[in-house]
Image (cartoon, rainbow, N blue to C red; front, side):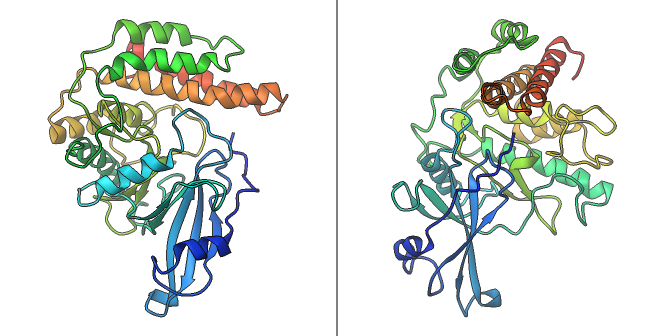
Amino acid sequence: MNTPQTDVAVDVERLTDWVGDRIPGRGLLRATRMGEETGTANALFLVERDDPAAPGGVFRCVLRRPPLRILAPGASDIEREWRILSALEGTPVPHPAPLLVNLDAELIGAPFIVMAVVDGFTPVGHLPAPYDRPHQRHELSLAMVDAIVDLGAVDWKAAGLDGLGKPDGFLERQVPRWLAQLDRYRFRDVPLLDRVADWLTAERPAAGPAGLMHGDYSPFNVMASPTDPTRLAAVIDWDTGTVGDPLLDIGHLLARWADPGEEPVIMQPLDILDRDGLATRADMAQRYAERSGHALEDLRYYQVLALFKLAIILEGPVARANESNSPEAEGLAARVDRLIDFADKFARGERT
């Protein structure tokens, strides 16, 4: 699914002229692509400039711009991401500090933001020290919960985020919205999808208090601190953030979370591989309820909705692969089918 975007580039001369003296250092900027293998995500560049006052004589920041191909309407929204990052300044939510924004696609071919470098790493695969110890991995999993508790508690109106989303009727719109997106590229019957959609429609809970939410919360979208397992270094990738039902964030995290020794939902290294010591879904749900004050009697609904939404988003690449007769089509389709199968398992109470 993740096809390298080899033709995403930055014209450093034009960027240098535009930046001017708004970041430290002097002379021509240098831009190096980061994480090029994640071709469906926003493109990241490490931007550097000589600065005698900076550590090692170099000032570093990160430029983030949309990918060449956007998976879902509303994704990779740079203006939205800038608004949220700016609103998070001064809150307990760990995030990359926003430095500059340019919404004019003319300069480098796409709008972009410039952020401070985060001292952290994405906690997927085999984790380095101190997370090679079970107790520290347990702390990390609870820190992931704490970050979205803090996020949901942000006073989004006071932070200037009116109009960011449409919290009224948020849950009611979800199933029709995602089915409408699927209809734009549907070419096959996904087993159990209609049954899951019917369950979501029939079992929809009453709306709770509106809150700021990330929209795609998982270990792949956080950065762990290299020194403090009790607090994340940052939550990243805010382009699908909105004001809606914050319980969907905990639902998304826990729907994809495998307890130690349990079969994972997503069979690929986008999660922590050594799960000994990690908190269980029950532990994390209890932590969320205790810290947020929100009852989680409807958690199952949000877990099902999260997997349903993710499956429909990923069906887009399946349709494109099928149209181009790509050999990846079968494997991508199996991933979508698996997500819906686990959504159905949550709906029936087979997985809790």
